[in-house]
Image (cartoon, rainbow, N blue to C red; front, side, top):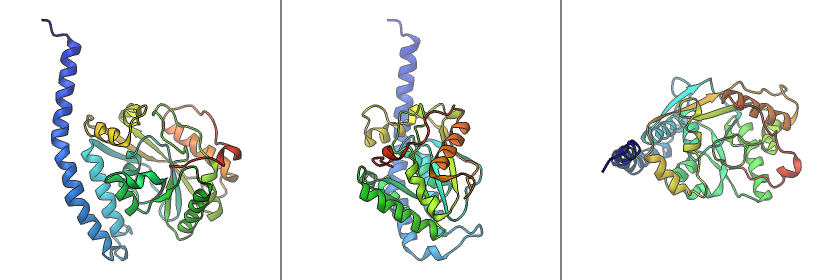
Length: 284
């Protein structure tokens, strides 16, 4: 029987995936069962009063280190470009998969706005809650109103907040329109907005690999990515939009999306959604 090149390649790929599971599985277990409790103990102590030489809070640095370790275990080699704003700022990024939160947290401490279901996800959900995430109940306008109020409170306190203005993940092939309503908190608080482009693989070639597949659950995506080859993950902090640079939340949303698309080498498409669509928008 002749073994074809495709069959050989498939067998080699399967073996490589099995070996990656064999290596990363124990590392993930150690990271979750040993490192995570140590992190939780450390951040439960009065570490927020301790500042490093860079000015960063010690508990924030500990959380960032744990998230960076999680990305490394999953085979992502982090690369950061640009400079994240310090203090009160609204970070807005394209949304590919659950790893986006860990990727961003590994580079800069920020409280996310995320769908409530994430709180129940193993490991990731628990750390999201500890990482100052604001959970939103999708489809609930009362919840969104509360989210916007909490965002403004944090921004006025000088803290950073991050959102995914597309409102949901996609297949990785495009960046969807940005819902302008979520930018209201930055407008009302008078703080800058910094777009962030997330790219997986060289030049973003693995966006569709990292993204959720059709009807793929969190658990299935989590396990699949654990066996994926090592690849680059880039977090690009782009030029911020300062208060007064753009007129109104809709224009800020448009400029933010345009800068992310430019960083990813994509042409502009649909703009930020208008008020009627915003009324039912889900942000995760």
